[in-house]
Length: 325
Image 1 (spheres, one colour):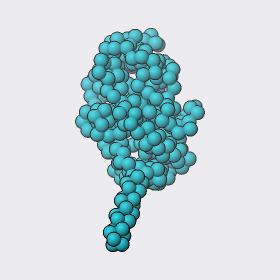
Image 2: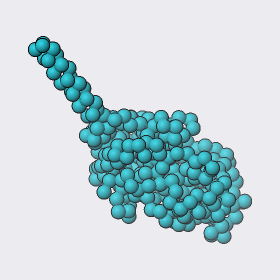
Image 3: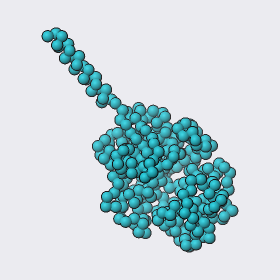
Image 4: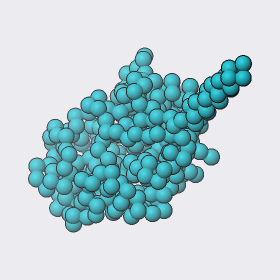
């Protein structure tokens, strides 16, 4: 009888230990990037390197995107978070069967994209793109934005020579076969500075307020957000700490990014980190916040210009409720 009671107690203790171990086990989180690692993503790598995710019970994996992009993988439930852009989310939201994803944080507060060209081309404003060539992805929204920017200044978009091209090396492109390229200044613009190129640049957000949309954002799977909001909040809490550290110590953050992506040019990474210090949060109250007026204004522009097939309701597709206080 004593042996039986001892065995029962031992088994009970073992079950308790197993149960406790399971309750404290890490939760696996996959984050899919929009492109190869760059300074848009530094806060994620800083949080990973410094153990901020681990401290909150998260086992985070950061991976590069499949051919059909991060949002498709997040929508499928194979990843919890991904990096995307508001302009790319528009067609995913404006259908009868929208992708089940929600933007939960702005990685950078303002749109840092615009047009760059060599200074000797004299393209200092959208109107001056007339008579010059432009490397286009041939996307309706892309071309509409440039057309609107030109028309706002009395320019004629039909006079731009469109060269279909997916530019992966801006420095080479603007010195050879094209006069102007759409870039994100934090990377390609800074790269041109570091390499000593004499360029002109104008930002879309400075031409029309509707173009101060969010590039990029973190998106999350809707089912995941609904079923496990605490884990989503923990992930964003740790991520916010990573981006805060990148703001406060850009060179240290650059070293961390280069550790995970050693193929990057460190000089460009450091310069980009220093430039982004003022852009991750900018004039917002905190990192990650998405302003509803700006979010809605861009989708309204797309609808008004017949660039999406279905109107997107105000405040649809984003949430600030998972961000840390």
